[in-house]
Amino acid sequence: MSPEQADSGGEDIDTRTDVYSLGVVLYELLIGALPLSTADFRKAAFGELLRKLRDEDALPPSTKLRTMGQSSVAAQNRRTEPAVLARQLRGDLDAITLKALEKDRSRRYGSPSDLAADIERYLHDQAVLATAPSLTYRTHKFVRRHRWGVAAASALAFALIALALTMAIQSARIVRERDRANREAETARRVTDFLTGLFNVSDPDKARGNRITAREILDEGGRRIETSLSNEPEIQARMLATIGNVYSGLGLYPQAEKLVKQSVAIQQRVLGSDHPDTLTSQRLLGWLETRAGNHARAEKLLRDTLDRQRRVNGPEHTDTLKTATYLADVYYQQARYAEAEKILAGVLETSRRTRGAEHPETLSVMHSMALVYDGKQLFDKEEMLWRQLVDARRLVLGADHPSTITSIQNLAYVRFRRREFADAEKLQREVVETHRRILGPEHPNTLTATGNLANTLQAEGRLGEAEKLQRETLDARRRVLGPNHLDTLYSTNNLALVLQDEGRYGEAEALYREALEGERRILGDNHPDIGIVWYNLAALAAHRKDRRNSLAYLRQALEHGYIDAEFMTTDEAWKSLRSDPEYRALFTQIQQRAADGQRTTAH
Image (cartoon, rainbow, N blue to C red; front, side, top):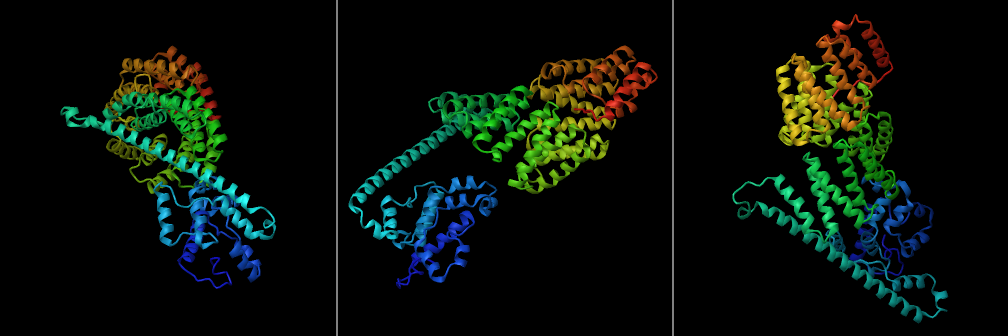
């Protein structure tokens, strides 16, 4: 009921009463509660109820939302925190709502169409007509409540002061709004001019009949940003990060890292180290360092980003949770599975509670947890998560989304580890075909899928097909990622495995040693992954009846923590050594460590 309907004075009712009702609806849509408490209405006498409707002002929606704490249904429906929603409401939305709910109907919008027009202005980032009540108006309300006490004061002097303050506030606000609008307009114009000039490279007069690829446009954009936007650092940093992110999506990590480093440096200087834009770019840089295998630098960057985001945004903010997941990935890459699992367990619980079980970010955390289970050899838990992820991502993201395809690929990997090769091959062929169609034949994800398919074909004894795919994968990784990237070295090791099975021992040994040297240079001499190459060299020496080197390499594999007792019982390479006392002693140690749950992994 509007105040005039609750008034016994018999005022006429007009469309401004409808405006009041629409204001009540808008208030409840914004925060999930009515302007005045219905609990108080049920307790009050009828006359008191009418007085409340006539005289008690509603709190601004943002203020009332803060008093509701964590119980806001509106915040839950938007999957956000009440404090974040309150910041979004503060300002224009508060002003529009309160103008519709004015007790004095002459101060309301004249009609529902006026209210709709102001909301439309807000949606189009235009200045709205509603403003915070002026000091003069607040004084008038105060006088109505305390008319006898105020009558004894000098109203004239107070009114003059109030008028001066109101004019100053309004003038300052107009200046701020004008400056903000000018800055945003200039930013939009400069970005438009930059992009227009960038895409002009495809103009027939400039291209001279040559076809211009998207990659060439990106490269040209990266070059132009440094010169054409040098006097506008905020815009320059934003464009550097944007193009760097596009490079990253294409798997062009070195190009992405260069631009994102520049963006972070500019944002730290201009915006400060705690600004959200700076922290977002810094997180991307940490992710790129992880992809490049620079784990120490990645960990340092992501730890710093996480500490700042926890302080600035809070521990449950979306950006904070995403950075924590990236840090856990760094630990996973270094085989620090217990640390990764601890972080991910906390992130997963928070994400399910605040964002929902099927939110894409929650699914991303589940993905990371499944990888940790793989590292810990917990295959039942791992397969259960991959199955859940395949079903959820197909439903939420679609069958062709890269994250869905990655989940299918990892489910195939578990089947491979369980020697269910036919099922693994079927899933892997689906993944390779989809990646080639969507991402292209040389995208890092496509190459990973192709290498996995080759591993399965090798396990099925189809060595010719496996060798062809492994060579294609290795050649592409050398071109795209470079010869010293970890994925390139893993491909080197995997091709050597196929050549070894084909009896081409000399070629296989050369590739093993290349992989061993590269991994030791990047990971350090004690990383568990290096034990895999030592084991492969040991098996190769055993095939060649080289007892001395075979046992020496096997000791190296054992020292690096790589053991695969189950495979050694079936591998024909060890057949000639099974009666050797030294080999049997080593194998007993391997069995004991396997029984203790130590790591047995393969690329």
